[in-house]
Amino acid sequence: MSYSARIEGTIHTFASLRELMAKATPLRSGDCLAGLAAASGEERVAAQMCLADVPLARFLEEQLIPYEEDEVTRLIVDTHDKDAFAPVSEMTVGMFRDWLLSDAADGAVLKKIAPGITPEMAAAVSKLMRLQDLIYVASKCRVVVGFRDTIGLPGTLAVRIQPNHPTDDARGIAASTLDGLFYGSGDAVIGINPATDNLKNVCVLLDMLDNLRQRYDIPTQSCVLTHVTTTIQAIEKGAPVDLVFQSIAGTEGANKSFGINLAMLREGREAALSLNRGTVGNNVMYFETGQGSALSANAHRGVDQQTCEARAYAVAREFKPLLVNTVVGFIGPEYLYDGKQIARAGLEDHFCGKLMGVPMGVDVCYTNHAEADQDDMDALLTLLCTAGCNYIMGVPGADDIMLNYQSTSYHDALYARRLLGLKPAPEFEAWLEKNGICDSRGRLKPVSPRNPMLHMSRELERAGV
Image (cartoon, rainbow, N blue to C red):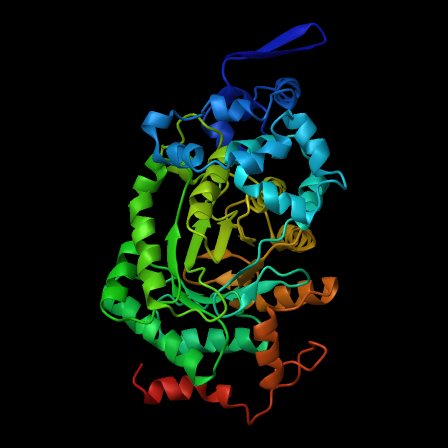
């Protein structure tokens, strides 16, 4: 089915819903690289005008990637909740946008419709929104999850401690972890990106993190961000796995490039659930995504990168994760050229995920060859925390020396919490106060020289880790 709009005597025609979605997307370098972007601002506006008149139900009839050719499409179609969709089923994309911005669409209502919103619907409405629209609607969507603490509650902002080290040195990882804990970070997860996917090394890191958690009775979860198959093998060997990590994408082909499929993710989740290690919940999956991943694998199937990204959230939603985050500027300027494109993408991703009922966080980040700097990240961090982002990254000095990119620091998280009156997860906040890291008002206290955690690195060295 074709779509068309007239602007000042010029008729713009779009051959399919897939083309219409791509042409309506705000400008970004990845879509230009793929040859999918609108040729001009006028064509983009014409596409957005057409898209506003498309019924939401059309996305259930016209698949952007054929059902028979893609297991992500099959997942989206087969798990669609018609009852949840019913309240908005008669709306067009434009009407849906107006309704989302209205007082009628409060948090309780948005939670009920989330299972009925497909990623293509979420992506479509986001293309018609200004940044303030994306922020406002996302701020109404709360997705609360738990494992050893509760993440996503109103008035909270969680932080992942990301203590990466180029050689997986235990003392270096411990120092970064200690730094984060004393800044009140770590309630989302203490998560290491290992320098190698070697199973023995992964098990050593898992044991180390679990020993630290138990030694200081920290109400959080740990994760080594290795491939799902490696984590399954670690579980089989008796390693103390809390969360199963995997990078995911929005097409079957892109997931194949990561060496995964849906069945593999299901196996990983079932393995983690069998350990029964959670105390306040059983959300055991951790997923990372990013606009441009499907294109970089040449597996986007002609779909624009933002819609592909939203489709990844359908994959995430199926497995009831604790953590999902878009590593928004990590892939590079070929996909998001500058700070403006990164900011727009981060807010789109957070909005789409939250609208679909996914517990979204964002790695507010950029690579050194992008036209972006830390000022851009300060702005995006502030906007995302205003929008109710579940969690962000805590990297020492905001500079990941293993992955070689720029992110956010423990200091940045502290800034956001203080500025907006946000707190850590409640169980973690109680632990911070009990251990003299924060006072009863949530303010950081000077570290006592008698605090046992100051000896963390020494204890690791004595243990031969």
